Image (cartoon, rainbow, N blue to C red; front, side, top):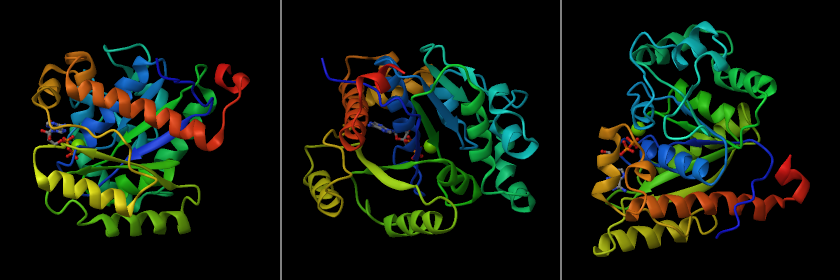
Length: 279
Ligand code: ADP
Ligand code: MG
């Protein structure tokens, strides 16, 4: 079995790409579930008004449910909105509701509008009795204030790239935004991980896209690629990740391997002592 010692720190990753339909939410929830399955304690923060991550994690998110909207706009403590996914006691979710659709506009006039998520998360981590290993933020498909809140709160950016036409289109704008955030709001932010998603190895195009992305980002792209798989796309309609829905499917296996890589690449960079691992 793979070495999955955890770092002992809370790693905050934001899953971002201003393109829609590239696999952000699918990657956020499946990596989170796979991390939880190997013993990590994981919080998913659903920052997309669509609420697809909340749905996939089986967490209620109707309009009456306290949500990230209340946290960002009305300063509800994060602890008051967090729910546990039925999938695992280790898997938590701060849900999004339809109210979040208005937050992008409402935030504009708020004090410390870029720092709202970071402040709420820092308070939560300081007060929480049980340590979190990972916080994974699922972003909407835009570079607006919700995504900027995610970049300000995170240590690492995880970019899913769909192995299709125009895969790299828009990437320079995304990286430009990351640099702007590093300069003005969060010097510690860095692009740590790129995941190739919806890979169909039978097509020459997918292979070409994968090669091109690996050439540009040799250190960031995970070895594991996520195959295009019907089981992955079916799972959310059952309120599940593919890890729970069909754990033996190719998509589930790939996301588990990706999760192990994410853990190992970090411990490889920073080192980990036995003590930290057990802290
Ligand atoms: P985003 O959050 O970037 O908008 P999603 O994660 O919602 O993208 O994915 C877009 C669509 O593609 C969804 O219908 C999802 O089920 C499907 N999808 C994502 N990854 C895969 C995959 N590996 N195989 C098949 N379908 C996928
Ligand atoms: Mg999404």
